[in-house]
Length: 119
Image 1 (cartoon, helix red, strand yellow):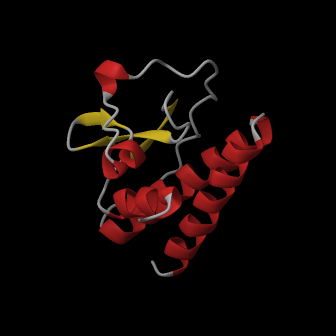
Image 2: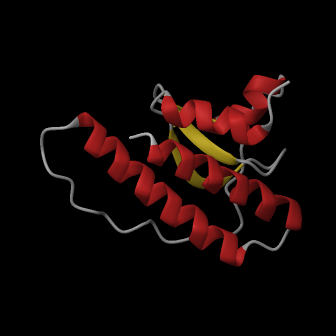
Image 3: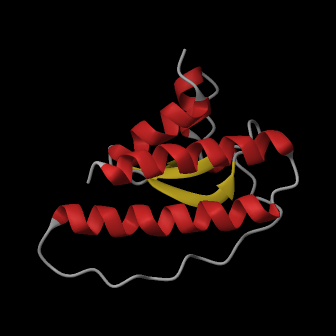
């Protein structure tokens, strides 16, 4: 069975967008994928939390600042989106109270940095 950080990394690579809300069942960040908001970890592991069954997270960080992206390359747009996501995750780590969630977020950052190196 895949680890949550591997599942989230796969969805980021497939074009999913990590949201600032967390899944109430497992605490993982929710994703917007193919027009649907869902917990990709629960969906992969059989829980299947979707927007209808997910309550908003008790606290939300402000959205990451928009970085300008030069037109043209799809890779540069992906890199810019990944950079914004990494900044957001680092900001969220600073305010995370639960050790388990903090570790999960740090693993996501490490995976994101690794993906970023390959772009």
